[in-house]
Amino acid sequence: MLDAGTSRDTLDKTLLLWWEDFYLPIFKYIFPKMGQLEGKKVLELGTGTGGTATLLAKRGATVVGIDLLPFRLTEAKTRAADYGVAESVEFALMDAMHLAFPDNTFDFIISKSVLVFTAHTETAQECYRVLKPGGKAIFIENMRHHPAVWLYRKAFLKYSGKLHYFSLHDVEAVGAEFEKLEHREFHLSAVSALFWQQCISVPLFYRWTFRILKAMDTFLLKCLPFLKRFCWITAMICHKD
Image 1 (tube, rainbow, N blue to C red):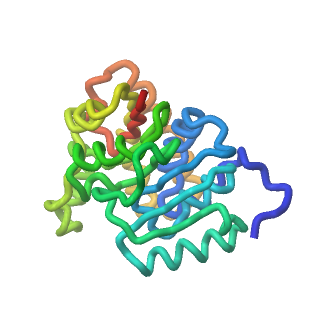
Image 2: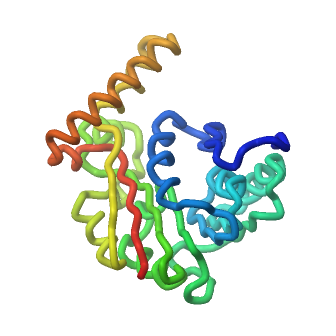
Image 3: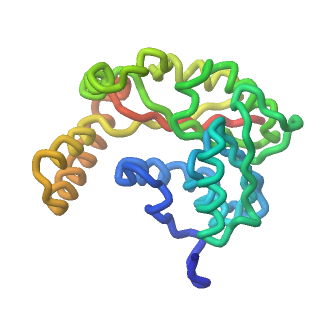
């Protein structure tokens, strides 16, 4: 359960659930764009075990999390209850491409690795429909062209050929369904920290390696912006006027 003194501005890494080090800088990028969430209504696509939905509820939002897997929704309800936010979160079995909500319902929509399983623009159009004027849809997605990640997918993820990983062109296509698009790409060389973590199981070494590689990525992407297409993850913030 949450301690009564827990700040709603605290970003609880445990709720990022997996590869938290890699998602932490992404959430630090998007949360300031969302501002204060008190009284805001948020839809999470592909809520999974409810980590992000719970994180948003802790920050004051009323959240609806949807997923296509009933057992995940059961886990999500348990997680929300464990963190003391069950009354602020509702979970429903629903397809992200066919949202059973009226137009102009949500202040924010957020998803993590969901659009790769769908037709990008059709899902974006449906999100636009249920988003309130002035709202934002935030899509965190896996990109297509990172060489090491591409090799990993080919070798170990047999279903990866069926997924619609993002190129920068795809990012722009999703953004074209809204009035304004902001996006930032993450993790160019930093992905290799996962390799070093497997080779040298010393947490301190991994942490320092990851920190150095993140700093290197920041420098490279600033000086050589064409390298963005080779990043692992993109975070899109799409605005509806």
